Image (cartoon, rainbow, N blue to C red; front, top):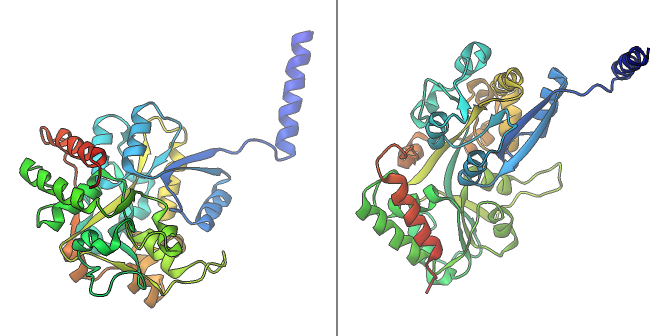
Length: 359
């Protein structure tokens, strides 16, 4: 009788929770960059799917990858940059995609971005947003005559302690390589050494390596030139009317003429994702034109969703979409981990950059 009473009580409690709307909603866990999905998009997805979206953030691909390798689990969708996807797939951190569950992706992907995507078959990843790395700069602080459209500005002595570089191995070493006319994906030891020397020369001016706070520090005047991502920088320039943040005409964005990085961040399905079907629905939701338009207006960068891009205001579209001539100067960051000795070469170069004191 006691067991029956307990069973009856449990059933009654469960029924009560259902009747009162207190049952736990399914949760979609996303691991991504900060401020990278529009709240309105999240709210719309939650309402449409009767779920809760939980966001965790990282500030570099290396931080994200290290956490996953150390056993970080529980995520459904992760948003690495393209060059890490193949490695993550090979190590069993992510799963191949079932395209039957994401029909909007093939239907709405903008072919204008095809040459910027590493895997056009979308085997393991769905392109989320593209970023171009350049300079966020204070127009009234940069010395007269300094060429803000060149990597050489980082060595200008008038900028001592007023410059930040991204805290990202591929971006920083890639900057050194491109400034010397080399490929951002070089694995030539002599070229890597030369890039390190270039970065160490810049380090005399560097306040810190930083992938987050440069967005606000250029606006505050603490930094005059910040190496950063186009999406972050455009967010600062356009402001946020709802948050009472005014546009900033005194802040500019420049792409170095010697070359700049092009990197897609991707949506990938985590291995052993707790909610794979919900993850697929989210990927498909992002590729709806109306949702992509809202999302692009928030993140200040392009999702490669043609109906969404076509729906943007023409002036805003011209702000976040590069011209073919600009794209031609960019270099896509590609995976190098399968090239024997390449990652060891880069890691040693990065350790040297970080450990060497500026003189």
